[in-house]
Length: 272
Length: 342
Image (cartoon, rainbow over all chains, first blue to last red; front, side, top):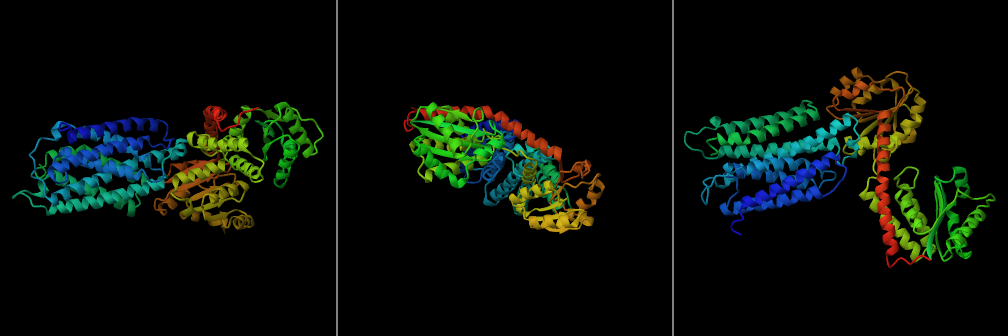
């Protein structure tokens, strides 16, 4: 079984995410009327294989597997998938899996591109515990932001249906919009705290002589993300930004995060 | 021994006749004893509700003879001297079991899919069971009927949704707010519609209610009945800053709440959602209010539309339920433990 690498495991996980995405489309078309477990188990199978994939790679390095873009992306997705499975156990939250599956599938396909996972030695350079903590907390923060975006999409769908008096709003097994708003806010808060910890630990890490944080696109990008989420939280909590606008903001920032994650990593001297 | 049914329901007989044949709760054990004493039935269950009077029996008699005896029993028991024809239906196996399963599942009810009949049937069975008027045949048939009803409830949409305006309003509130127990309701207008909606909300956990009406006496009366507080009609709009749900059904000939009035109030509500239920005709609330952020306005037509859509959905499910029932009846009749029909 030596030929069966962690990448094969991840490929199988992405196939399960794909199956969950296809099933999600049917659930969406039927207005989430059936409260079933099929999507949950498809996603759970994907997350189990995903866990095996990152465990295999982590064991081979004896550290948290977040050394290149492939590993960072798979770690982010794993945090998102696992959190979705946990949240789905809350009453009326099972359909969070249907909203999370397309994100896991599409970003999973992106992560599988071979160029994101160049071969490296038996023990990569990037492997002390502070660096692992820095990378892991930041990627978990992105996972929380991803889940917040998923909850925000659920909020926007349901809020629109309620505003337009669509029967689908009542027929669906989605939670109340007030509850979705609370969950979205909490997830953004958790993500923001993790991002703050991750960035602080990163600030304290030793760096090459002459290298500046302020010249590094990844650091600037992360700081901009931190400011964007801080602004969203403060505006919503203290300055009366409506739940709908807050949800739109959370979705937009996370989409931008996904779109620019690879590019900023590529141009970052400190992270390559 | 086979299961046979005789009965009158909202489908076959007018209410004047149904009430004539209704069994008072305390007379049922005596009636069951009489059925057995007359040799009409070995086992029997009497179901008597406002929409139906039915006698389920397991009898050794040939069906025609049993039906003659049951009709005579019904007429004698209720001192009815007229003739009973198409108002009374008689069913033999397997239709009798099919009918029992349909009744338990709410498929034979006036409002398709309603669940009250399940409890009534269970109670009727319990009375017969406790008084030892059921045996192997009816025990099996009724237990299977309850199982089938639960199966249908979970596997189909026959019992989903609100089929009345009031329950649709409550369901809407539950889709907007996490918990109704923490929400405050303002009832504008002390009419019957407002009262029913307020009571429906109370039944789902609402604790804080305020009532306002042009006539303060009526507001106070309704407030006392609901355990709520009464408000003067002159300054009810200021309450909108605090409440989460407002139910309006006044007889005003014009809008009593307009967008321009609500806009400044919303600024002070700190983004809390506001559900406005306008049950008045002509409408009390300007429709443009629904365009405001965090406001969800539903009028009586919107709610009636929801109730009608739900009813259509239930009707669409009937064929699915019938199929399940047919399969379950066949399974019951072929089961070894169900004594063969005679």
